[in-house]
Length: 86
Image (cartoon, rainbow, N blue to C red):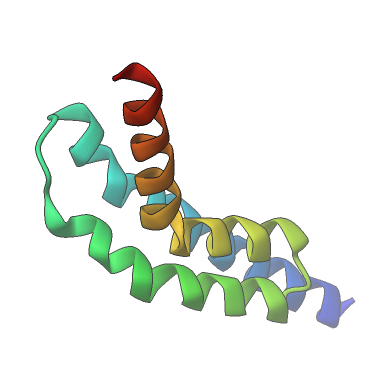
């Protein structure tokens, strides 16, 4: 019972790290200006992935890994859209 509560706490911490990573990207999309807050995703989201691993949360692990590499994913999608538009 105690182990299950501990795993749930680590999973919640992992989810919080994911939400922080998402909110760090929001100013770039809302204000259409390149703020540098997103760089913190390289620090916060790997920690969230470790929390997800400790808490045995597959969603926590995958979501934080995706957010860690979100800059490269967004760059790829942006260049792909630019290639199709022009």
